[in-house]
Each structure stands twice: as C-alpha cells, then as structure tokens.
Image 1 (tube, rainbow, N blue to C red):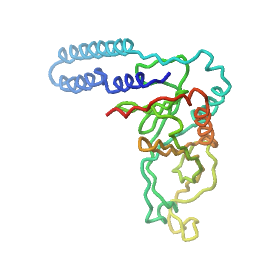
Image 2 (image 1 turned 120 degrees about the vertical axis):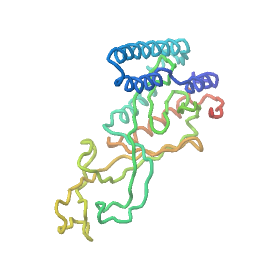
Image 3 (image 1 turned 90 degrees about the horizontal axis):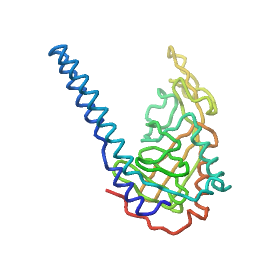
Image 4 (image 1 turned 60 degrees about the vertical axis):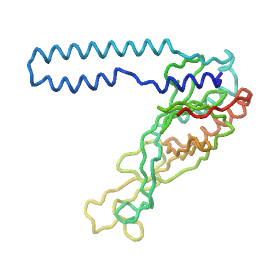
Length: 274
C-alpha cells in the first residue's frame, strides 16, 4: 500500500542524484583537452574515463537495489474486474502515437501569415507507459504520465513526483476535464488523429489561400483530444493526445480508481517534499 511512510522514503530517494552522469560529463571535457597533448595521454585518459564511469554506474545501481522500497498489494488485485477495466482505460492513453504537454498559449496578432491560427501554442513532448519511481518495486504494474512532473496511478492514490520529492494525493482531490481541439500542424501529423481539413501558411480574408504568395504551403488541420489534470494547488497541466477517445478513456480510468474500495480507504496526505 502507498502509506505515508512509504511516500516519505520515496521522496528522500528522489532527491538523491546519480554520480556517474556528472563524472562522465567532466571526463568528456577533459578528454577533449587531452586531444592536443599526446596520443598516449589521450588513450590512457579514455581507458580511465570508461573504467571510472562504469564503476560509478554499477555503484549507483547497487545502492538503488539496497534502497528498494516494496509497495505490495493483494495478489488478487490484477484479477479484480474493476482493476482490469481501469487498466484498459489507461491503455488507450499509453497507445497514443503522440502526447504533448502544453507549455504556453498566446494570442496571434497576425493571423493572415500564421495559417489563420488564433493562438500560438508552445508544446513539449510527454510520455505515458508503465513504470515506477526510482528504487521502488511492486507486485502490480503501475501506469504513469510524465509531463512537467510524473504522475504514478497506484490503486489507492496518485503519487506525484519530480526532482524535489513526491506527494501522495487522494483521487477525490483530482479534477479531470476532457475535450477536443483543432490544431494546425506543419507538414506531418500522427495518422491516428482525424484530419479535418487543410489550410495554408498565408490565408486571405475568407480563409482560403492567398494566391499572391508563391509557394504558399498547405498545412493540415487535425483534431486532438485535450486532457486537463488539476490537483488543487499541487499540480495543473494540459495535454494534447493524438488518439481519438484517449482523454475520455483516461478520465474513466481515474474515476474507476476513485470509486474502488481500496482507493477510498482513509489516509493522510503529507506536505510535499521541498
């Protein structure tokens, strides 16, 4: 179970930084410096850098194994119909060809030269799948959604993690809104997303192509699912999903977890680790 004690231990482990990536970076820059000295110094430093990086990587791996945290649930959990149904809902999100998180959105002043778009949206890639935080093991598979922070959907609560720590959030404190949006793509778009129409890079007053412009590029207009997740003052983020129906399916999965008997068990919610 995802108890307060377990969450506190996970939060401490999240703050720990692996040593080997920093050493590898330092060795690389020193390796570049040795290029101008001599061949023997260059080869010796190369061998030493590889050995040191591998040694520290294995040391970090051993430390992580020693600090493993077991999050156990009843063996019958994965055979529970409600649990199976919630997993099927999350599968639709995980199977999306593309997932983006929305970083910012601003009004477009010159719609004519921006394919008629009303807003300029900055989005970064996001990821969904199955996994666990570092040094955590469990007897069941846990779906996650990684945006600016990583959300792990345990059966009894949501675990919200970033580099600063973790917080346990009850499912009844999560608000999820879904919908769809029209998005003007460049040249390429995920083929699973419905193609609504085409527009042009430079449009006329009626929305058609401005024929005075040579090589006026054609741009596809597609429909994406919109997923908004809000956890009071702890987390708020908007995602675009390429798979039709994936946002509603995800919302259904969270509702199933909220209604399940195990997620309704009382538990305290610790303050987020600083």
